[in-house]
Amino acid sequence: MAFDEAGLPAIDRFWARTQRGPQPDDCWTWTGPPTGGYGRLIVNGNRENAHRFAYTHFTGHRIPDGYHVDHLCRNQMCVNPRHLEPVTPKTNTNRGQSPSSVAARTGRCVSGKHALVGDNLRVRANGKRECRACCNDARKTYREANRDKIRAQKRASYLRNAESVKASARAYYWAKKDGD
Image (cartoon, rainbow, N blue to C red; front, side, top):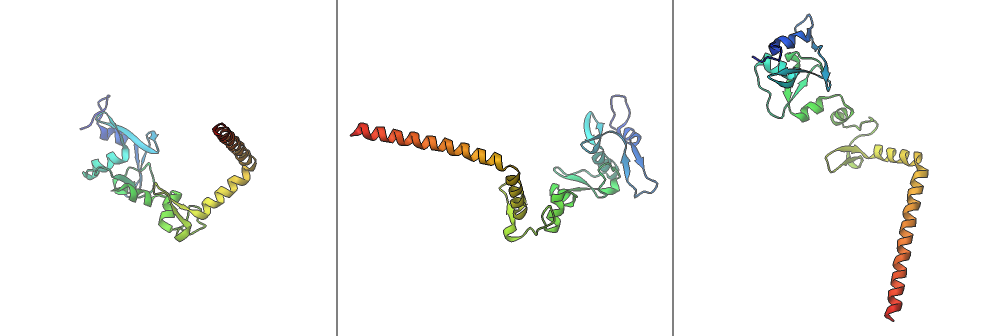
């Protein structure tokens, strides 16, 4: 049995910070302070996510290494083991409600305006999928908003390069003249 510094078993501390709904299928809401959006408690001297503790304690199943515990109810503060399922990180992400998860499921870009197929789909070296049309729109908006800044940068680059070209030409001229 896991105890904390005060000598209370982890399961007692778990129930002290959990509010159960009247029905067995209702969410069990973690009322303790959240850390990173999830409940935490100390088990055997280690911090553990409350939903992971609930899953292993109440189901008796071990969570495979590298797996996440997905909240089927989409409530991060829920610790009801009936609402929890160990899944791969990819499955957990794809089930999520983030714009990139929705885009991956629907085949549309994050904005929802364009299909992510053919020439409109750009895959970066890190595997991130992007909508080419949205990237072009963002680039155009940035350039319009920062026109003067971009012109100043181009002018400074041009002047640096022009000086470099002049210096190279002078060096070539003097090397040629000295060689004659």
